Length: 445
Ligand SMILES: Nc1ncnc2c1ncn2[C@@H]1O[C@H](COP(=O)(O)OP(=O)(O)OP(=O)(O)O)[C@@H](O)[C@H]1O
Image (cartoon, rainbow, N blue to C red):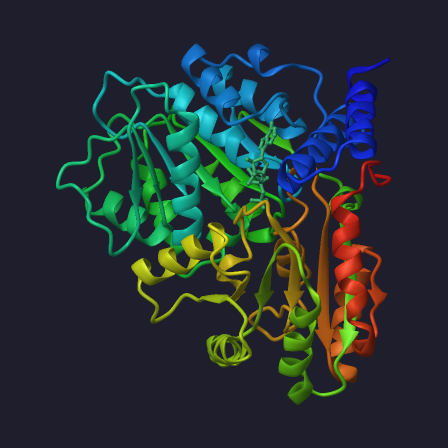
C-alpha cells in the first residue's frame, strides 16, 4: 500500500470511528493527502521528481524550507531553482497562480548572497506594497536560519540612510528611483527578480527607468522574471534588457487553466440589484473567507459601508488615498481572520496568498484601461483561490447584455468552463463551498 493510500485510509478510518471535534486538524489531514496525490501526478504543476535536497540549496535554507512545512518542490521550483542557484543564465519563468513561484525566487535570492557583505546583493521588485510585504515575510521566514537580513523598501516606511541589508524587496517606483539617485547601491548586486513582471512593465515610467538602470548594471548580474502571465511588454523587456544566455520556462496557453477553481456567474438583473445579491450571498455562506473585486474605489467604499451596516465583518483595500499603514492593517486583519470578507480593487489581484480564502467574487467584470474585458486580470483575480492544490470557487456578477458579452469574451479567450447560479438559489453556494473542502480526489488536469 502506498503512503498516500495509507494516509487516505487513516483519514477515512478516523472519520468513521471518532467523533471529530477538531475540524481544522481534520481539514489539514485531508488537504495533505490531497496534496500528496497531486504531487505524485506528472500532469500537475505541483509535481516534481527531485526533492528539495537535490536543488543545490545551502543547508540553512533547506532548514527554512522544511520549517515552512514544504515536503516536496513544485514543478516551477524544481525547474527554476537549479538555474538560479547553479547556472550563469538569466531566467524567464512562467507558472500558474499559486504554484510556489515565490519560494522559488526567494530561495534563489537567499542562496546567491554572501551574508558577510553588508550591502544589497539581491533585489526583488514587486508591483504592490502588499505583495512586497508578503514576499518580505516569506524571505524572513524561509531565511530564518541564515544571517541574511532582508529590507522592505516601499513608500512611507522608514528606510535606513545607508542600506546594508543583503536582500531588498520593494515597489518599482521606490527602488528604481533610489537606484537612479544612488541612495540604493548596486555595487555588490548579483541578482534582480521582477515578480509579476508583465504587470510591472505595464506601469507608468517603469520600462524607461529599467532601461536607464540596465545601463548602470554590471554585465554578470542575473535577471529573473516571474509571472503567471506574460505580455508583449515583457517580450520587449526581454529583448532590451535580459541578455542571452537565458532559460525560458513557459506554459502553453492550454496549461493556464486553473483546474481546481469552480467558476460560476450570477445574473443580478440590474446594476442596482448587485449590492443586495452580494449581501444575500454572504447571508448564506457559513465557512471560509472571500475577496470581492470591484472596478472603482468608489464602489469599494460604498459596498464596504453597506456590508458593515448589514452586519458583515469586512475589510477594504485600494491604492490611492489609503495610507500604507492603513492598507497593511486592513490586510493583516483579513489574514488573521478578524474579517471574513475583503473588498478590493485590482490592487490585490496579483500574487496575494491567503490559503484560507475559498471564494472570489468578481462584483465587477475585470476591464483593461480601454474598458475592454480583461482575461489576464480575471485569471489573476480568481487565482487568489485554489492555492497550491486547494480547491476554490469564483463567482462573477453580470447584470445586462453588455456585461454578459464581456464575461463570455473572457471565458472563451481562456477556454474555461463557467456555470450559472440562479440569484434565487444562493443557498446552494454554501454546499458547494463545503463540498470543495472535502474533495480527496484530484480534478482531471
Ligand atoms: N513546495 C511547497 N509545498 C507546499 N506548499 C508550498 C510549496 N511551495 C509553496 N507553497 C505554498 O503555496 C502557496 C502559493 O505559493 P506562491 O504564493 O508562491 O504562489 P505563486 O506561484 O507565486 O502564485 P501567484 O502567481 O498568485 O503569485 C503558498 O501558501 C506557499 O506557502
